[in-house]
Image 1 (cartoon, rainbow, N blue to C red):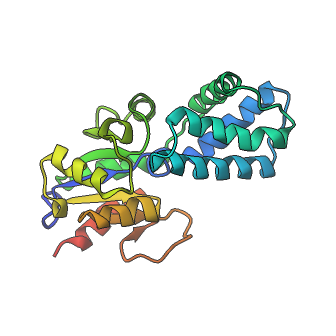
Image 2: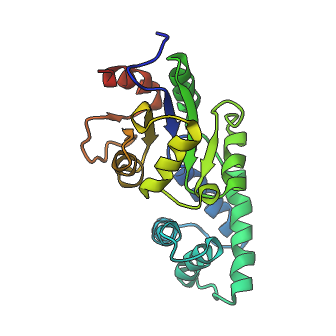
Length: 236
């Protein structure tokens, strides 16, 4: 099927958890980094790392701490569980640099990422990415996935000066695209940050719920391969 779907003109993708498998990449990177230190990654440590990331990344997202400080706070939470001294801020920055290098080596896209982008573009719709994070890192992720030159404009929280789920992030996105809010659909895995955030700004939104964890939402898919079908159903 070609041609536009209803009033939609563009579909914008989240990155981490939607196109890039951040959780799996972070776990593999964490395991490699700990192994270099003679430590073993356990389920307890992996869960603590994920919880610390979620907590402190949210603090950065809301402007409470700097990008560097949210990374240090994650280490301050987890290093004691490993019996590793926390040290100074400089020590923490050096330690995180080691994890970051391993994490970057572990970057892996979801198998359906390319099909999702191709399917949307096959409907005659423009594509873009709106992601919380820094310009350099997020663009590097898309480059690794082979999508940087294909997916359209890439907008980051760092570049915009505001992060999802703040409605201003989505409003600025639409301004950059030159489109009305009801002409844009946003696709993401985080129901609060991506779906409710987009809708609060007047965009359409699709919840990518790969695991079926919910919550129930009328616009839900479990794979990006089903995105074109759902977009057709959104047409009035």
